[in-house]
Length: 394
Image (tube, rainbow, N blue to C red; front, side, top):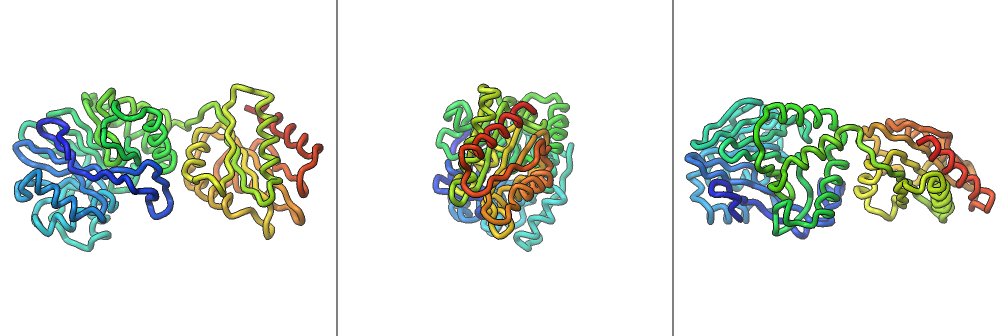
């Protein structure tokens, strides 16, 4: 627990041990936090809770800050159990406290907990008077669930943004200006790339809407990671960039390989690309060995994605199939692509890779390149030339 200012207290939980999130779908190398905020104005509002495994600890520690019966309102920005998981335990103590959420929030919370709590439905523009300040509600559907919403606290010009602008990042510092800036940027872009990318069009519109209110923002308090207090709009500006068909001057080569033939192809293709433009940031990843969310982050940054796989059972290797399925769901825009692969018998993988990349919504700029067995010098030269041809199309 720590006081953000005289009215707002952070009452969440830092989870240093967390390594996976959303089941096994998201890696959290640097842990995370579940941020809950207590506003003690003339009226008292609690914004979100914590993940369910920490519900008893959350309620116990909350009692150390305030008599629970003095909580007038609970704000449920999002029903996912990393934010709402403390509600059942808390509501055993204060069962009749009203819960403010969106209409979709009611559906989601009932779906999770099967309880008919004292729900109060709000929509964009609705306000809740706390005394010196008001909470202004802002619906934010698909950032990243249909039920998501923000609040703006008028007294201190604080935006409570739930999952938007967050990071899975554990730190006792808890403020953006105190933590390692490289780590913070990496976790923020990874969070956006893996979670929010499919909703980029909605992200852009929602940010335009929020900025259109022309309200001062002294602080942005997300539900994961650190609080943005030093130039908080910097993360909003990053989201605008990331939501606008983002790319860096980068080529990302991803491959899966059985006996290193496809790996050697990837390395030669990379050399060919570099020979055309040494300023390109070229990154290679064996998708069966590198964390999938880290790979996706680098795919998100790329202007060209080159993907290869060995052929197995007239198909592609499972690691590559998994990554392509993730990429397909992200609905990436403004990215070129090409496929390649090695084979011993039937040789379907390059064609399958090309078709899969098209299904991912990427602009395929060359026919798939295939090599029979281990590439010899001639085949490696062909791969090099393939890289040259790809680079010239950038």
